[in-house]
Image (cartoon, rainbow, N blue to C red; front, side):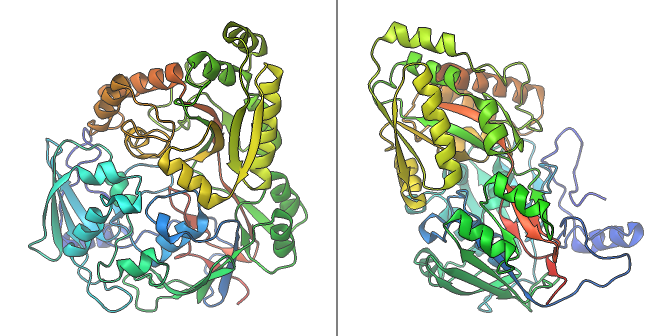
Amino acid sequence: MSSRFRTSTAHPRRGLLVSAVVAALVVLATGCTSAVGLQRSGTESLLQPGENVPTGGTARIGVGADLIPATFLSLGNNPTNGGVSANVFDTLVQYPHGSLEPEPRLATSWQLSDDGRRLELALRDDVRFHNGKEFTSRDVEFTLRTYTDPSWNAQFRRTAATIAAFDTSDPHRIVLTLSQPTGNIFDLLAVAPILDGDTVDGLKEGRVFNGTGPFTFVSWQPKVALSLARNADYWGEPPHLDGVTFTVVSDDQALVTKLRTGQIDAAYDLPSLDAELAVSRGGFRSHVLEGAESDQYIGINVSAPPLTDVRVRQAIAYAIDRDRILADVYRGKGYASSLPWPRTSPAYDEQTANTYGRDVERARALVAQIGDVPTIPLNYPADRTSRIIAEIIQANLRDVGIDVDLIPTDAAQMTSLLVAGQFPGLWVTQHGFAQMTPSTLAVAAFPFNAVKNASNFLDPEYQSHAVAAWQQQDPASPAAIDAYRALNADLLESLFLVEIGVVQTEVVVSTDLGGFDWSRTNDPRFDSTYLLRT
């Protein structure tokens, strides 16, 4: 049974507002999980049929990046930020792994008007923040208004800004009035952690994390560790674990050592070869996070000479050996593409996905037209995987007559440069959001936002196409597909960034850790996780 009640199959985003009583009656008749309860997806079980899920123990997660409170709403590729957001806090809805059909979380049901300008949501009436404060519609309003605050640099700022009015007269119901049809409104509701306005200043400072989620915040020692504890008063099923600890390990080899010696139960950010070796030696499993794809790309500041010349950007696109990067660095966990979309996206177009394959002669001819190209700086995250990718790119570009200087850059500085659009030339990193509603990429993501992006690329036609895609209520409709084709043409022609390929995040976990789960935005979720050894 779907947890989403719809008025018609013609409008997959239009929910029918129903009462919890009716939903419960349906559950009794069908035996399905309640539509107003929390859905637990999880991964394959490590238990035998009929065996009880063990409780207790603390899951120890190794991560390469520390918590960055100031970017808490930015949704960067940071499993520590994401781990706090997805476990200490709740969202109104959630996406399952294989679908963009929202499921209930703090919102139990919803109804979207035919014109896409009025969204009514029924809210749970049994939820409290960790400090005991009751969750109400005013908290939803505060959260969504916070997304429009420029000091947070939230990537969904434009989407949140389309909410023109809030009706919070009922504490357990909220009505959003939108200034325009906003086809990615459920993306916002699926990623926005519901905040407590009384303690939000403490959140930004990294002192107080007061959510409604299955775990409570315990402590954070910067660059060392962050700890969460089981929320025994959780409104849903309480988690099986006593707690979760994120251990920050910036060195790849140290991360491997901690995993192999049993000091941690799971590792994010392992290079793919190290992950393969750990699994091959036994005691570990690899989880490729299906439905939460990211994209490796080369960003280009089009306002910085010589990158102002589109022929230089075309030469870069033709020079890159995408297949080598995907094979050598990601060990085949992904595929080369000239466009950002995973194959499951309605915006994916097989005919144009590989427009820019490696063509050294064509790239050299473009460089010959231009003449001497000055050396270009290339920033990359200061980790081993990114360094290898940057070195491959450097060699590829040297083959066609373009020299680059490699600049290792720490994670916080990469984020700062990305948000401000201040990279001096090229940069290489990953972006997300292509796995969400396609319009989100062009109106929310820092690298793509048509109004303000990291490449300083501003074009009225691209902006018009982004809005046209944004206003499509059905992301798979013929009109939406046409809008995505226009966006694809813009991306391939302007090349304000050069896609390398779609990659899947891999997490290596101990065979003692079961029920490992993740959100569509790559955030680790521990509400269903358990340890066979406690």
